[in-house]
Image (cartoon, rainbow, N blue to C red):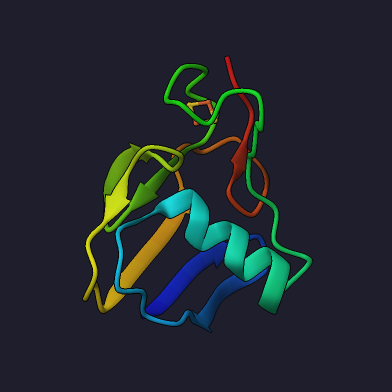
Length: 97
Ligand code: FES
């Protein structure tokens, strides 16, 4: 799967291996961070990760979603991610009201 992420310095593209099972957008971000690019900033709350705190909101293919609960079906070919707000702290992390 081709993942394009709008980061603070421009758009970065990553190749993420296709999985035969459903993954969440958060799992894709974790893979990129752990295996490809340790400099990627995104919100991760290991105590939540259940769609409760809403801090992991990002825009995926133009739509605001919660990364920890949004599922990608096997066979998804492309994913475009960007911050879900104007007050960007860094990469996909935004200031919360
Ligand atoms: S980490 Fe809390 S809603 Fe996603």
